[in-house]
Length: 439
Image 1 (cartoon, rainbow, N blue to C red):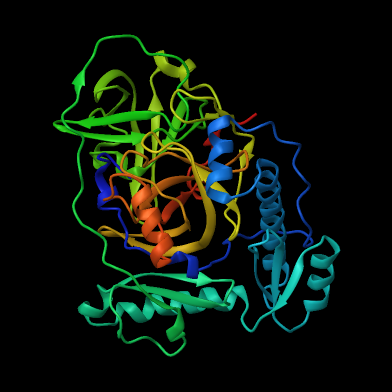
Image 2 (cartoon, rainbow, N blue to C red; image 1 turned 120 degrees about the vertical axis):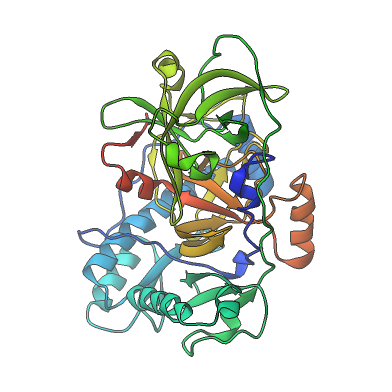
């Protein structure tokens, strides 16, 4: 999603994942009795552009979108508690296609207690063979097995994910017939094309004098610049660091000089004006991570602080949605992304806690959804309901000029666009004191 996107979005154009077939779980822990979180307060109406995307892409009303988003967070709370207290019987949880909560359980001590707790709050229960802990062990065992394979085999594996709905581990490869360890079900080895290589850059942007405009919201365009390299990305969530300094949380691969982040040579972040002209500089990269995770923290200049002192997500120039909190990814949850290139588009989470090869690194603990994103959308926000969820990191369709083409191909082949997302809760956990602005 990048600069023509950005740097690694072409490089980040991970191969098509057939993720509709690959469903995965949450990766979270907590303590307390397995019980759902309290229902959030009624959410305000959604802006017209987001409501239109929900109806177009999810084929559901905004009320149903908000209901499923809230239910997913109840499932997340139940899952963390059940995994903490009953790891020997808990097999994961998700929302099914009808928007109903499902909890998977393995026979054993404590199963009846979890079953009763789940059913008491209206969740369905499904009996399975493997616990979530066992599935994670299998995924780790696969990664260990892979390190001992010949280079031609290792390079053909694009990632692995816990398929919680099918109670197994799924593997993405770029060719059929590769050897696999015995615990990997051959039916869950999914062949996908190798990702295209090579980043695109923004044509050398020219500066335009002028003062900054109104509020800067998640989803607005920005340009990052280091020397002769300019990248086009989308602002992520506005926040504050541990010292109450204004920051913006966006993608790590949007930083054209990652080693310089936090120094006097850190690349600048600029308003991006029509015609790819640079507006005023609004900040610089304070911290950038690209590897197992993909995020940047942009330190906002004092002169632009007021512009970033909001909790808004929008299509550039259109009505915003106000962020009310931070959510956790749950398989089956409805989500929407905003980006400066393609605006709002929505889908359903089909895998979480997954490893996927993106260019020259493996993105860990990411989640994916069947959403189209194109160069320029990278770094933008992903929400569920009115909750902040993640940062757009990589797309399987970054080489297409418009979303209509890969979406049509997806209808014909069953292998539609996939967006891979950096979970926001991992970023916050990695940076004590960092907070997202909310109501």
